[in-house]
Length: 116
Image 1 (tube, helix red, strand yellow):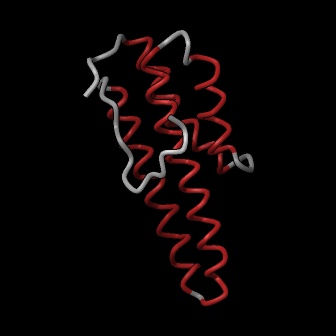
Image 2: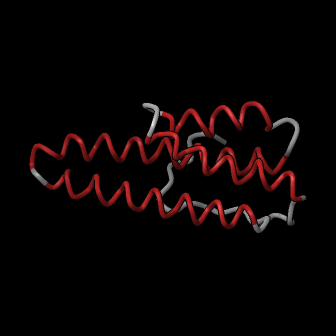
């Protein structure tokens, strides 16, 4: 667990996670939101580097899982998987944002760690 960060840093930490919800408005916004924030603030704030990587890795994983579910729509189960993945992604993003607002780093489950 990382030491608690200052309040302004926490705002950027929370935004790293919440920006993933842009995916509901912009195609691939779930990846672009955390990526842009991480690229802009990672040198300035070490906590944003950690939270940004975590959020980015999770959103890339979610995108991969959704692509697999899209293929599985051919055998019906993909519809249920997409709903489950979407609900889980929203819930986990909210949990991560709350943890970030408390100064904690949240490790998303079932995440492929591509960005180190």
